[in-house]
Image (cartoon, rainbow, N blue to C red; front, side, top):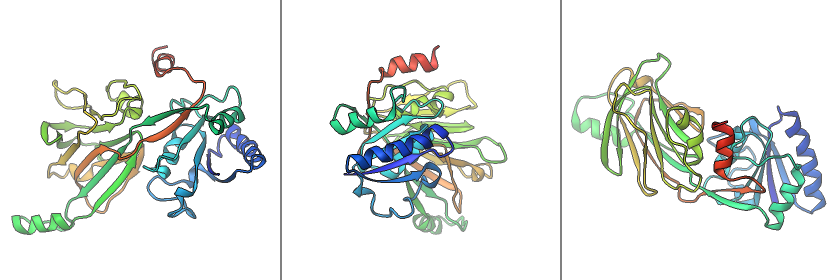
Length: 297
């Protein structure tokens, strides 16, 4: 077996726990590689692991939600289980370390941990052509040749207003049906896991982790008729930007990390991922017990 350890080196308890974990894994004959979470990029493989993520049988995260998101981004759609131990603040996705780290790892090795299949996101970003033209034919050709990028997210995608702070204009559709023309600070599209993050702060619903659809939440919309929306698992959310100077300054965040492009965003398409993210849980209360403790106490 071979494990990947992702630790928050800026947290002294997580840093110390990583050495204990390394000694335990060595005693069990398990190979491992250890990376500090700040060495784990969101949008590209860890240096030295290019094309080799499949060599790992499990990922162990020692840190908070930020470290978990970085590790999940490395796993992507591979179905490699992730065991998260909370050394952060909120740690909504992580196991408590109250009983120590080694019992958690031992439970995962023996098959006593509970497997949670968390729906994640596939995000496709299409940019506007780098050179502007008003000729319809030339514009269509230029748009076909414009760059396209794809991203993984466990929590959410957030399209927001840019550095100048001006509202942005866009239209969003669900499953090919136009829902609304929007003007405001932006839009969050989250998974059930991400519903406890930015989407919740923007006024979205708290959704149980077993829900497999998307959660769509406008951010500070300039209207009295806006509501959050939840979709069916197979639905696709499409966001189309209108042509305006303000929209050219819009920003995109994926799992809280800013993404920078060489030209403005034209369209964003969000769907659920092909394979879920697998989180391992051990001796933890139900989602609603945790939600009550964190959000309603």
